[in-house]
Length: 302
Image (tube, rainbow, N blue to C red; front, top):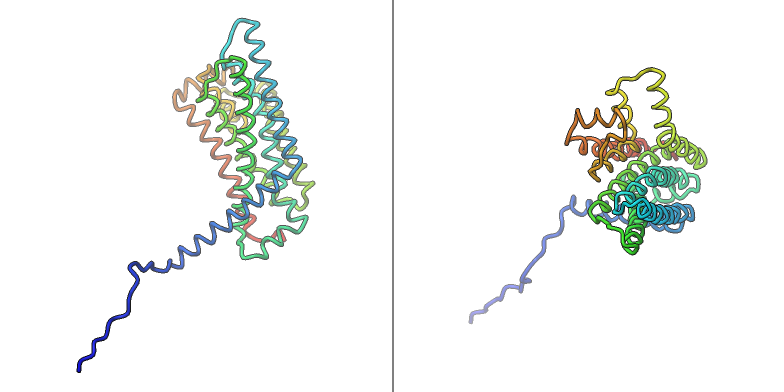
């Protein structure tokens, strides 16, 4: 008498268990996204963010409408005046929005105790910092896109020639400037002990970059007879000025309006000018953020 044994049935496909590094990476990504969603919800509930975003949108619509009306009166149409008005608005409002949003990000949570509560969970400091940064930049992307989108829609309704590619490029450059300012604001927020001190420092940096940059540079150039090349490199070291040069070159405008500095830039850099000034804005977006992350990672702020 013979007995036959049948082997146990095996499933058709057996998925191997994920490796430990893969599980860790998924957990880190999940933590970053959770913190980013929390930061985005906090920004949406912040009345100051809505005040800035709403003011930016209203001013963008008003300036684009005024530019279209003026262009019709003097006999010129098109998107050029509208774009120039939006660029001038971005130079003033977007740095202020980015700096204040970044300045409040760490300091206010530290002051309220929510930062200590967040880090009490299985969330590393790097994950918390990256999540806060990602949530803030996403909020700024929505604000900038909303302002430019509504302004472009109004311009199109009023029968102005809207170049969609130029509008999108200016919006992306504006968001890149906002990311740079968020990085600077977070650096201020990490080093400040109170949110009021962080906000005061952010406002001072905004005044320094937006107002004192042009006025102080012109005064220094007149007083010291600064050479044109030194004046150019001093100007583009300012991220706001680098943004302005980037948008002018993106719109294929002439840099002669900037005087000897613009002529020097075109003569020395030529077609590479667009990438040089754009790269400077990228450097401003990366370096302060990395320094802020390194300081926050040390863990001396609690």
